Structures are given as C-alpha cells and as structure tokens.
Image (cartoon, rainbow, N blue to C red; front, side, top):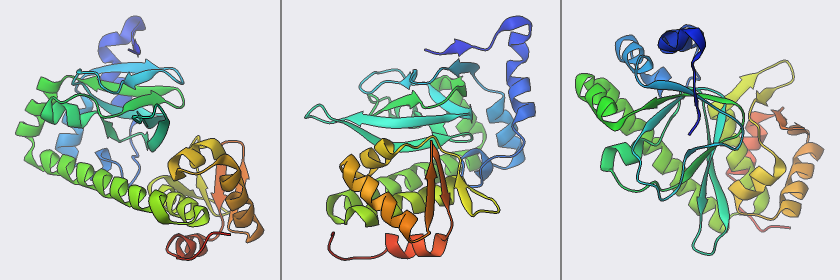
Length: 249
C-alpha cells in the first residue's frame, strides 16, 4: 500500500524527510522523544506517500508494520459487528499508528485511512523492536503514547454512551484543540480535515444533531466553522461545556 518515495533520490528520502521535520506537534510521539532516539527513528523504514482515502492499515489484517506519520492526517476507523463504520480518532505528523500489532502480533483492531495526502515512514516490526531495545526511553514513550490513546478511547466510549450531543461535541473539540490547535489572531484554529459528518461519527450522533450543536456553539460565539476548518474563539467556554452535565434539548 502507498507509493514509495523514489525518483533519483530514493535512497535519500529518509534524510529529506528528516530535514523537513523540524517542528513536531507538542503532544505527538516524536516530540516526546529525546534527540538521539528521535534521529534514529526518523532514519528507519521506507518513506511512502498515500493519496486521500488510501489505506495504510486494514482492520483484521495480520501485517505488523508500524507507521510514523511525517505529513498529513489519517482517520482511524473501525467496523462494528452490525456493519457500521465508526470514526475512532484522527492522527497527524509525529504520531505512530499500527504499533499495537507490532507489539503483540495480533490482527489489526482498526483501519487507518489517509484523510489528506500523507507521507509516512513504514517500519518493519523487527526494526521497530530493535529500535525500542536500543532506546529504552523510546520504549517508555511508546508506553505513554499507548496509554494516552487508551485513556482517550475510554473517555470517548463513556461520553458517546451517555452525554448530550452538545457535551460530546465540546469534549471532542476540546481534545482536538489540545492536540492540534494552532493559535491565531481569531482564536485557536484546528488545521484538521474534519467535516460535520466526521464529528457525527466521532460523537456517535446523527448529522442533524451535530449541526444543531455546531449552530449553538456559533450562536454563543465559541466556534466558527468553514469548509474543513474550525476556529475556537473561547477555549474556556468550550471546556466548561465539555464538562457539563444535563439533559439534551
């Protein structure tokens, strides 16, 4: 899957990728590494390009590659027993995806699909495990990353099971602000290719309910929405709503 970065400089693709990867999102896996393991990790694997909607990982498959995202966004989706597709998470540059299969050799628990053009290091299981043995602090960083993902998944299940739609949407946006927010003169912009349908899938809600929640946030001057663009004007108010309890209108 994916296209290997080739042309005349194929052997230099990892070096070119490293040169472009100076600033990493603060909460990403790569940002959590110290310089030596970070440099070692960025030298691993084959650099591949993925077009939007192309799969890096497919649920149920037994491959064990790990993918380090160098550019772009991916959607993590899962198919339920009833055949419904659920959006579980978004990941971007500096994040690892597929590491669980490398650690336990189990089948893929979800699919990972490119949401935008994506550049990723495809790292074989053996090379990834050697890297972790050589850099114990990186192994600890993997453990922290997996723990954060499990915590977020647990919170997501709890919120989508009981909270009003407005509360769920605010909780999701609050998490995205923390992970992917970019301060601007308008507020905090989410440079995430997130549609209202994506929000509905993340919230486990109907599209009309999410549209009503977004309209309410716009009415309160908390949020501005555009095509695949969200700006949060009042993060404190958003967080307060995310923590609210009450009955849905």
